[in-house]
Amino acid sequence: MKWMKEKSENKKEEAVGVDPVVTPIVKGKEPPRLLRGMKDLLPQDGMLWDWVETTARQVSREAGFERLDPPHLEDVRLFIRAVGKETDIVEKELFSFVDQGGETVALRPEFTASMVRAYIEHGFLNQPQPVRLYTIGSLFRYERPQAGRFREHHQWGIEVIGDQHPVLDAEAMILALRFFRILGITVTAEVNSIGCMTCRPPFREALIAFYRARRKHLCENCQRRLAKNPLRLLDCKEPTCQPFKEGAPQIVDWLCDGCKQHFIKVLEYCDAGGVPYTLSTHLVRGLDYYTKTVFELYTTRTTGEGETRIALGGGGRYDELVGMLGGRSAPAVGFGIGIERIVGELKIRGITPPINNRVEVFVAQLGDAGRERALKLLEEMRTVGLVVRGSLSKDGLKSQLEIANRANALITVIIGQKEVLDETVILREMEGGMQEIVPYDKVIGELQKKLGKKGGAML
Ligand code: HAM
Image (cartoon, rainbow, N blue to C red; front, side, top):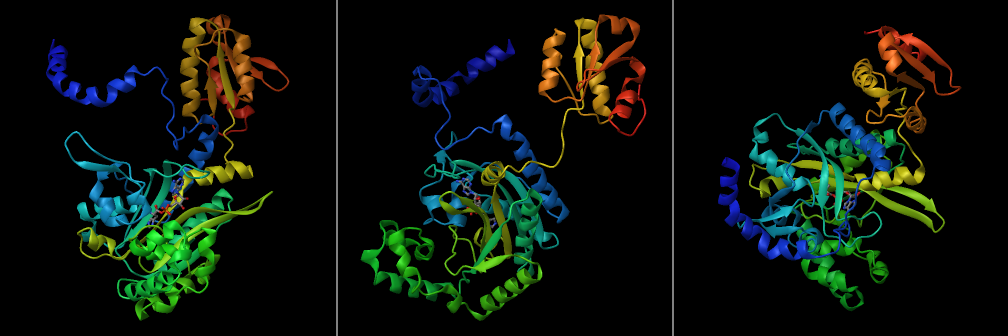
C-alpha cells in the first residue's frame, strides 16, 4: 500500500520531530489548557468581531485600499531591521524559533515590516504610486498579560506606500475616525512629529545630555533606555520619571525645515478634515521605523475610578523603511488598530451592530421524509434571502419549537409525514401560536408576504 510505504519512509523524520519536545508533553496527565495571554474568540463575541472586521474592510475598500495579507511567519531579520533591535517588541516580545530547516523565523509582531517586504518583493514600486494596502489578522507579542494586552492580538492595518505628501498623514487619521464613527466610539488623536534622520540625531544628543544629568532619579527601565533608545524616555509611564518630562528638550523645537513644514501642513489638513487632535510633544511610539508624523488614537471611558484612556490604534510616517529593507526609497504612512480593544469597548458600552439578523423562519420536521423536504426548503429559502434556521438532526416537535423560540424566530414551518403526503406545510406564527396550512409550492411566497418582503413564490 502506497500510504504505508510513505509512512515508513517518513518515520525517521517523524522521530526527530517528536522525541525531544513532544514526548514529555504527550506523557503528562494534565489536560492541555489555553496558553497565558491567549484568548478564544467565543460565540457571544462573534457578531461584534464580524461587525468590526466587515466595517474595516468596507472602509478600506471605499477609500481605494486593496487587500494584501502577509504570512504569519517571517525571517526574524525582517523585524530586527524594521522594528529595531533595541525596541521592546524585538528585544523582549518576539516569538522566534529555529525551524526544521535551521532558519530562525518569527511570528509577526506587527504588519508594517511584512507589508513593506511584500511591496518590495512583488514589485509594487513599479506601479503607480502611492500603493494603498490593507490587511486584517493576528499578531504575536510576548507581553506581560494585562487588561487589553494579549500575546496574540488582531489588528486592522492600512499602509499608503510611495508618496510623501502630508495630506496622506491626515487622510489616514480621517479614515480611522470614519471607522470609529460607524462603530459609535468617540476617538481623539494625539499627534507629534519625531523628525527625520537629519534633525533627530542632534535632538537625541540633547535628550541624552538632559537625562544623563538626572540618571540616578530615573526608573530602572529608563536608565537602560538612556543608552539604548533614549527617545522612549519621553513616554515612560513611571511616576518617578514624570517630573523630568516638563523640562526635557522637545523634538518640535529641533525639527529641520522640511520636517517642520511637513508637520504644519499635516496639522492644517487635520483642521480642514475635522480631526479632533491634541499635540503631544512626548509621543514617540515604540517602533524604530517612524519618521516625521506619529499619532495615537484614544478613547476615554469614565469609570468609578475616574477617566480611563484606551489606545485603540496608532501609526505614523515611515519614509526610510522601504529603502532600509532594500527597496528604492519610497516614503510611506499607515496605522494599526487593535480589534480586541475595540470589541472590549463595544461590549462595555453595550453597542451592538445595527443589522438585524433576527431569524425570520425556523423549519421543523417530523420523520425522515419531512427531514428531506426541510433540507431542500431551507436551501430554497436562503436562496431568496430569508433568514432561516433549522435543526435537521432533531425529531420531536416540542424540542424543535423550543429551539425556534430560543432563536427568536418569527414563523416556524412544520413539515410532518402528513404534510409530505399532502404536499403542504404548516405555518406557525410564534407570537400567538396561530397556525395555517399552506400548499408546499406557495410557502415561500406566503412567507415573503407575511414578512413584508418583496418577491413572489420561487417554487
Ligand atoms: P502598535 O501601536 O504597536 O502599532 O499597535 C497598534 C494597536 O494595536 C495599538 O494601539 C493597540 O490598540 C493594539 N495592540 C498592540 N499590542 C496589543 C496587544 N498586545 N494586545 C492587544 N492589542 C494590542 C503597530 O503595530 C504599527 N505597525 C502600526 C502602523 C502601521 N504604523 C504604521 N503603519
